[in-house]
Length: 346
Ligand code: JFZ
Image 1 (tube, rainbow, N blue to C red):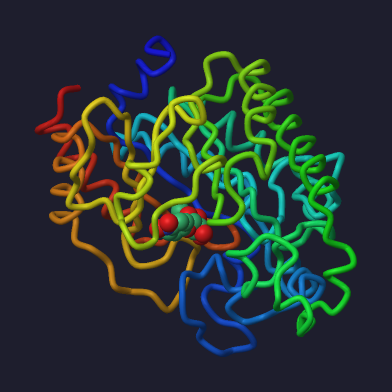
Image 2 (spheres, rainbow, N blue to C red):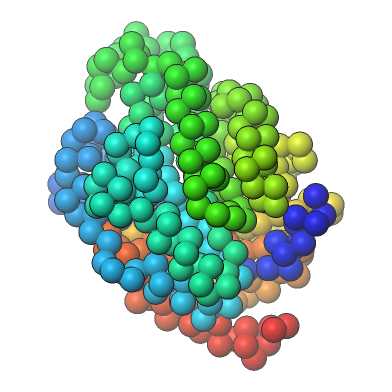
């Protein structure tokens, strides 16, 4: 355990990337600004998945070389690792998946996980996958309706039906979904060479513990990637009422480190490896509407605060649908990099 955690403990700073079909929506649905973080727009705008795919797929056009730009930017910022969304809750997979046609290979002819992993490696960065356990696209996914997210089936709301997807209840099938989840993750850990981090997201209350056959899934991943480091969101729900909840719920058997949100100012817990993840504005996925950027000064302070309390900071960018990183993020990352050059330890 200590051996595989070594680089991670020394890393201190990583770049997080939220990028998927939602990037094309840029915070609006049918012209209307939507509340909430932009990567949740399918739920917040109550869009059926077929309609979502119909509108979003044509907008998703990765430009050539986008991954090299991300990796170079990560390097310039002083980050030592890059964690990107191989799949977010929308269910669109960035790799070439044989168990789904809702994937980048089918949509664009390209395997974007391969492009990103290779680009990160070329810059000497460690690379990790954020993989969503939630999947709003898969027909058997048993927690599809926003209203039911917190609740395992059967749920009283079932009787009211699902406005967005009336047949949903008939298709929901936990076992079939688990099998799909395991098969898709297997592709990711077997086909792309060494993967350094698996960043699971996330098990809401009611869908935690072994709901996803977590022990079996983690063992499979560990077998394919003996050195991989995993967070604990596959097994444990996070505490919504307590921002430090996931620290208290940490369980070494089901995660190497824990990833509390809103963990700044940092508290940390002795003996537990932890990582704060944070946006530079107020959204993970790209939104053209969110221009409330934190200052570089504030971000540097957050990085120092986290590092001084023994944690890592995973700082997010939300590229546009063609892979372009918002200029405000580019500027801040370069300034952080310059600060680290002057004040950091390498
Ligand atoms: C999850 C995602 O839903 C979100 O889109 C983003 O990817 C983020 C990094 O992770 O969001 C969460 C999950 C749990 C909590 C907060 C946000 N929580 O328990 O406080």
